Image: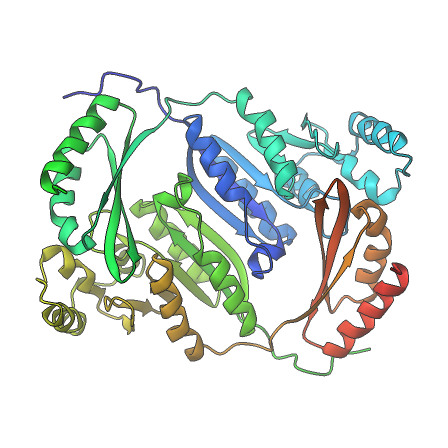
Length: 247
Length: 247
């Protein structure tokens, strides 16, 4: 059977998480999990994630490599006002772009701090450092904007701000057909499942068939997830899987 | 003041997480957070993490790049019995090593399944596929071993097994001086903190000073973390920070 529905090609994406706090084990990353779910929902394939520390050469190299390989790149972290926030300058360097305090970003910050009776000091003004060619990304939570340069979307690390920026950006991107999936839990060890599962994968090369083992109360089992863009094909594969492993 | 204590150089490490389930947002990674904390505890610097899908060229390229750049590399995922478990073969390919079912690994599995009255079928036997040059890593949880080739430690993705393998491997590695840290919570926006904090970072170039902003009940604040290998220097910097931001 050929795939007849919904086979618009899926754009690819990568994520770059910037920050020592993830690598030191101090903070458990939340943004990767959020972005992965959001991208899957709109039919964009997250293919790779990298986590690097607050180190300019590492950030620049990762941005260049990911930007050249994938349709879009999403970064999180390093765009605040403190000395260790170096992401904006690294993005400019990665694209040979000029960077300085930009009037549009400064105006946003000035209005925000005026409203709150706070001073737009030198540190806060760093958050208006935006590469010349960038388009701003709105930040409804704390105003200081993210930005995009070419296919790279630069967003904050604080989860509430990151999520708000993702919500702003996603509708502007063209996704492919959403990935559909069905899951079957099989209460047997993967070693018993693997043979028939391999045959199923061979019969349905248009689908992605994954096995995710678990252990619960000393028993082994696995969740088998069948993913694809054609609901009928997934139904068919799921029927065949249930035949092989009757409950 | 010079750094006088404990300045043994810290070895570097990277992690490679292998698996579609993380990138699709289906599973929230737990192994990165665990490994990051464990490595920090023994004085090894986790510098980079990559997450790639169950795709041979992507896995091979990442293994080669990370292995060449860092002192050690830890992988998680893709060493089970199912068709999508391709990590062992990719590691062999990355190092131009030969791979097949190895007698020592087969013997471990045979004894285990004999004990449990289960069959060592073809699928389970895949877990005995180990590169020729590899050293096995014990798996006290579910027996199927991990292995190391050169500076790459290949471990399971199931968190309980991953953690047991990390516990086996870590004592065999030579760490640097453990990283010490102190944290001060400051209930002010980062924009107010950033100026004095930048000066502190300038005065204490031997320490790493990070600012991790948070928002709670509509108020902004930040945890300032000072890290280093010299407890006295950290105390000194912390005193100076408290002077700048009295509570």
